[in-house]
Image (cartoon, rainbow, N blue to C red; front, side, top):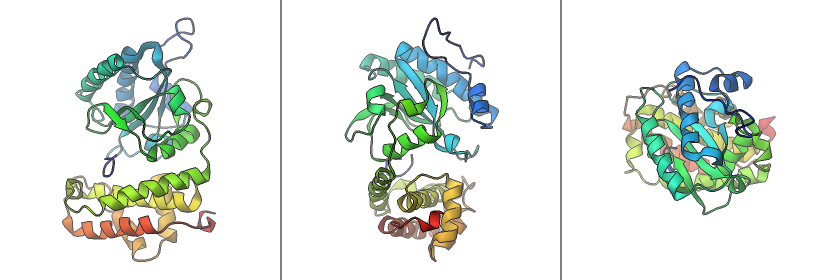
Length: 296
């Protein structure tokens, strides 16, 4: 995640005799979930699944798609491939070393999405509820797999996987992740907004020099956070943006409206829009609580 964080087409099937969980072909998983994805995405995931199993063997319990894939707002141009992998036991150092090599190999495949995988490997016990201060093997877009301490955004991610995740391998995620209450979502969003607010106080951060589509991402993320604070649930980016356009006061409504023209601009670096986006982040971090009337 930017900012404050920041194949074989015939995937092997495991029979019930050899393993209690079936490794689904991505095509069938997406069809079941009524998700239509570009063939390159399916090809990439078809390479990922057996590679995960190569590294983890029977310790791999479940693989779920999250993010825009799960929320129905996947954009072939700007979206990454978000996953949530669950293991029976914590990943050992030996398995981690293999996973690093596996992801390095995946990263150079001739596929548009090869360097755009994002997700953790979390053991079954830890997947059930977020536990502050714990570290898990996690990969970010364009980064190598590494041990990362997870922040409160992983409360939000658990909710997303539980309520909307696409099961590619393993049991229903509702059997692995406890329900996340609205007040827990609001608390996690509020704590996460502190990170964004601090980031907006760092004008020299090189991410402010990323193209316009990154600024659209920042604005849309603020819309989603505000929606969560008011409504007590997560929304897709399009839904959160539509809500913001109907709900936010000026000048922020105009900021959100303008940001939609930046969404697909992956080349133009425009310093002139940075102060406006910074101000929107600061405003969002200090506002947002409500009674939920605007969500109905």
